[in-house]
Image (tube, rainbow, N blue to C red):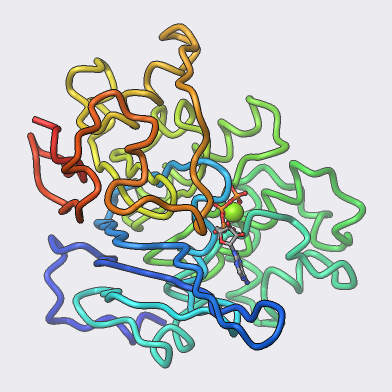
Length: 317
Ligand SMILES: Nc1ncnc2c1ncn2[C@@H]1O[C@H](COP(=O)(O)OP(=O)(O)OP(=O)(O)O)[C@@H](O)[C@H]1O
Ligand SMILES: [Mg+2]
């Protein structure tokens, strides 16, 4: 089942490496005037085996596009740039088509991705009626506390939380090496959300690379190993979870602002909103809201290593 993985890949290397990813849309305005929407620019993310990385960003920052870009399911009018390396080899469209749903799985944000007309069991087994697939399904159901009877039910007969566990089970049936979960927790109460996150943590502990995409920093900090902070389509910081224990160990002014906005740090919000792609300033997208802003912030800002993490800010030290 894992035929795609090259033996030459050193397991200490990242299982997934996204370098300088960009995604833009070509749109036609009234008449035939063509505009470009650069939704993602300069995005860098790495995930290692056994590691859970959370990409944290607010709504509209390009999180779903990142997931769809890796999975090779972007809309037709999107153009992607940069490189994606999976197990040491470039992840081309041809290659992702072969391994997606098997070695690399996406747990989509919404349970609308379940087929409403198909019973749960056959849906998760993807039509495989063999004894092995059935046994494996039993095992997964036990793990996710789903009763055997659920196999014979349709999605509408289950609660939202159960359907979410079914979605996760659908991803797990193939023992994936890399799991990408797009906003797996919205609409779930805190207890269920925590349990969903714990399932992903467990997958990482069993050796998979897990990339969780979320707007919920607090939840991410409870389970992830590393946090990648995303602002207006760009990665601004990559930090270990421990770096979030104190504000001083963080690097980017936006990450620090997120830290101060957490309930336990007093809900201190900064003014302004994330700019829409059409109104992006040159250079740092956070500059208009940043107290440390100088003229140099409107130049291109490099992604650089700093104190064991990475940052895209010329003032961070
Ligand atoms: N097909 C498309 N054509 C043009 N623009 C698009 C298209 N799909 C997405 N966008 C734009 O790209 C931006 C990022 O979208 P994306 O869905 O990745 O955000 P997100 O971070 O996942 O948001 P949310 O937290 O709300 O799920 C949005 O501003 C959206 O309007
Ligand atoms: Mg999204």
